[in-house]
Image (cartoon, rainbow, N blue to C red; front, side):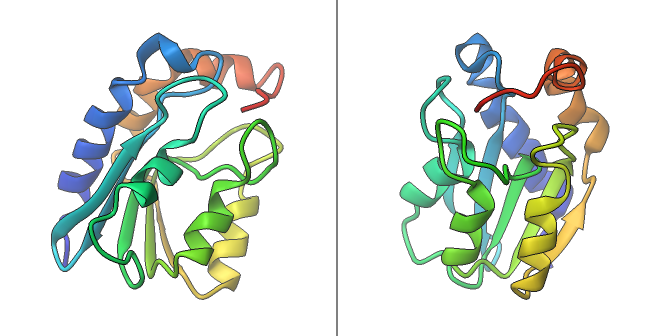
Length: 150
């Protein structure tokens, strides 16, 4: 079995590359793993552009079908400047999703997780949650006041 904390740490390192370029959205990293090997990776690079999960799928060196995706923040579940990321996860037939922290945004909060579970995807929550939340302290505070438009 894959080492969840190891791959989540790599996703956190990737997420940090987004820095201030993604504001007011959160920094998010995603790693796609199949048989213990990284087959795709991505991060949210710039506000208004593709999210981490989409960039990770675009970078895949083989089909992500049956793989595990590690994502530092719950995949978005609403249409903003980008389509909902949970739909891409289902479409790509990922077997397992490992999420670092939940999204407090009421437009997201659990909706994508529920849809992925209904699609038969195994979802693991809160892996390295503190570290993932630390990435986006300001986002967590402001998203409780007003939802970002991603």
